[in-house]
Image 1 (tube, rainbow, N blue to C red):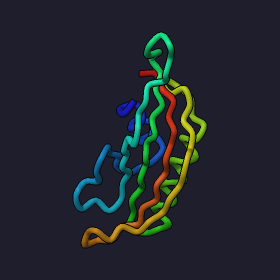
Image 2: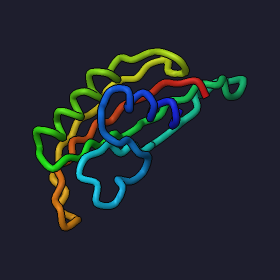
Image 3: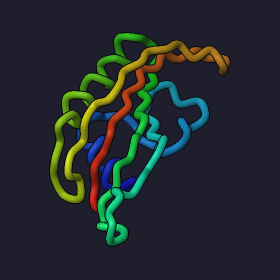
Length: 118
């Protein structure tokens, strides 16, 4: 799922996309994090399907650019179905301002529920 999702997001935006962490000193980019990933319950055992919550954070030096990247991902992923993905659905949206580094960054966060084949 991780590789397929990264490829899908890369097709939607023209910025670096990484799992887990924004590279040091990068001012613009997308970071993907799996918040949860649960196999679908079935009385006969695993059926090969899972549901994952993935947080997608977009970072930029301006709020407008962070939202532009976020909106491109939101438009392209919400309701997406194809390949291993049975359905990708937007669950929540947040904005923040990250001041933990010497160069403050604007962040727009999207949470998606992703139904996929393992």
